[in-house]
Image 1: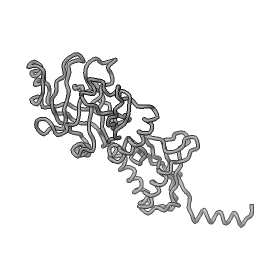
Image 2 (image 1 turned 60 degrees about the vertical axis):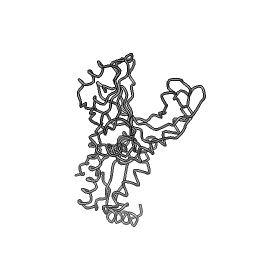
Image 3 (image 1 turned 180 degrees about the horizontal axis):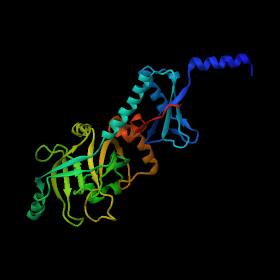
Image 4 (image 1 turned 45 degrees about the vertical axis):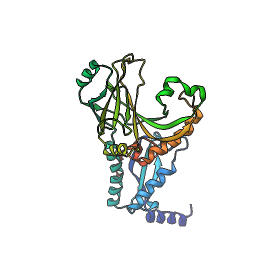
Length: 316
């Protein structure tokens, strides 16, 4: 090799420094194309911007996807990046992880059985003997469903299937209730009706053959953001029973978070085609992301999907 070229290359290395892996970031979702090992532009642009805001130049930071794990990114920093900036970058990622850990969907359900509408004095007595306060151990939201809103008459007569009349559809992200599930079979956000200042109505049944009993209550989330979103009617709640085959009782095992309307949509008995569903999922994700945290910790592509940060030991 030409000696002059060797000297030039050496000088260039001395001037520009050498990048070494400083941090490893573990995400909940893929961070790029696993086949081509290319990083999604969102992560490359966002992380570079985060670094720039604390004084790290774009030429001094590099990103690399892990070869074995497509949910992992390695961050390389030039040797000339000062320790203070390195530490601040690490702190920025750590703040996201800490916020994610606090972004729970868990709640407490308080009931007011005196507000109930019961089919008999016996059921009223049973309701009055229920505990007033129930923990609601919710897992984080995981998937979306397109749900339809029907009137009681439509459900009773099946008029929809005969006429093909469209109904309002909405995006619902569902959170699993950890066993033993909810005592109540249905739940919904109260729409300005009923007694007292309660934010939920509840349906209670001993079993699927028993008559339905109704009462009001309040749900309070551990995360204050969810309480505010419910108060502002940016989200609405529902309860879902999915385990009829294994649990004959009327306990709901999921809570649905309605994040927005899809307008009037045609369907067949509440079902839509797979192609329609795929088209709606993008809109549902956009609605959920617009709500911000804690939804962005589990939905869509963002830095909020960061699960953990690992400091890589310096090379000797």
